[in-house]
Length: 247
Image 1 (spheres, helix red, strand yellow):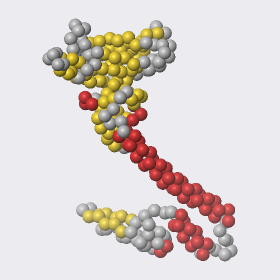
Image 2 (cartoon, helix red, strand yellow; image 1 turned 180 degrees about the vertical axis):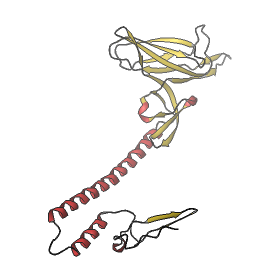
Image 3 (tube, helix red, strand yellow; image 1 turned 135 degrees about the vertical axis):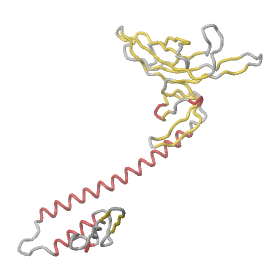
Image 4 (tube, helix red, strand yellow; image 1 turned 90 degrees about the vertical axis):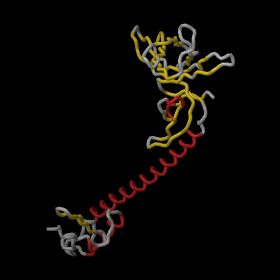
């Protein structure tokens, strides 16, 4: 037995043209109908239709309270204002996202220092046939009160191939560089290397935020804003992750 459609007897709003559709279903089949040809949601126009209908049909010996009517008008006016504000904010958001994409697109092909802990080392062939490493650069956020900061560079096998000391005075985010050479002086193999920074604060060890140098290859658009795709297959970065453009 199917569910009967909504009628004016069960839905008094249908005759006003503001009825909300009703869906009924049976085992193995479903049906839906919208009566009155009305909208699927109530708005300010719907409220005014209800209000005027109420005034037309009120009891002359017990008319509608003016204070209640004014309060209802104020509530719907506020709701209408909020809806308009949401529309305006959505427009601002779309414009902001478009501007961010254009800003990010201008960074394609440039080298930058971005928040992260993984960098890529390249190998090149010199004119004499020897192999040379490209080297890597990065930066560290020095914690307040740090007396020393060191950076360990680790290969994909988890072996520490270089330990660097970073100054704790002057720049709050000092840079560091690695020439890409192994302890024996030979070039390190090309590939990804991880950075980890440790600071000493009040005699105790404390992890510090690291940044890596990379070339921005392309820009993608996501729901969270522009996505910067980095060379060497490094993890993608957000525009807010860029702290310095270096070339």
